[in-house]
Length: 358
Image (cartoon, rainbow, N blue to C red; front, top):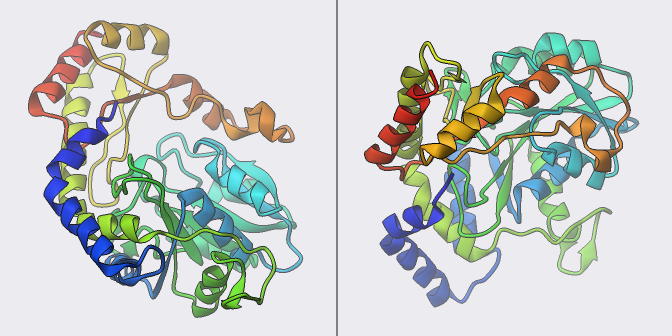
């Protein structure tokens, strides 16, 4: 599904230079590479503040902690995004409720959020699933009218843009992950929180390092040890300039799959326009097991993102929810190979396998 070694080989010279600079500097955390990357990413996203942390899940946890208004206790999220927001919200000490998604965008909408709102909800997490920057302006306005803050989860959508701004620039805070499979990937774990709110940025900065206001002086409770290290910051800083071109390649790959699937039993979700960065090539079929078997016979690996919705995960022990679109999608979706280093020959192999389904 994703051969990370190809991107490493492509970027070997770039990465070697970046890591050499770290070794020569003597800094291992919170050094010049970290500071430069935070500044570069803020400029790329069009936000005032970026705070590097140790993972995307840490970023979500810290953002939710900072965003939650006093007196509120619950986070509202979609249930179709892999459980990361649920995990983060639970770690932050809050309850989680779920809203259904629109079956076309697979994201929350004003209608689905409105139907799920309760008085105890203080934060809504909007996940831009599979790289699709949802039309978020109305969602933010709806939440703000009710005193609810919005956290954007941009782990799958970095680089996505609409005329009004980039993914990560709309919510009260936003988060992203730099896990190696992401569109902008490190060589290990990493994440970031972004915001235009200086007070929120200061609080996240304190929380990521024990709640310190200065060394060994704790100003706020609930702090963590969650810093983006210098090696990962250097790698990300080196890779950031190529992100848009690699996202273009991802969109092109999915366009080939969409064309190959036309008229067949597999509906590949399109990734057209700058608002979609094609993190995953996701398709729908009522014959999923059969289709996966045929694709495997043609040498094409597939996966499912994500097979069990959050509200049906035994470990989350969620209260009953009625989420028909979420549940239907979980039973029909499969993911095809989609990463920029796929060769044209490999893409043609996938397309031939898709056509064989008819």
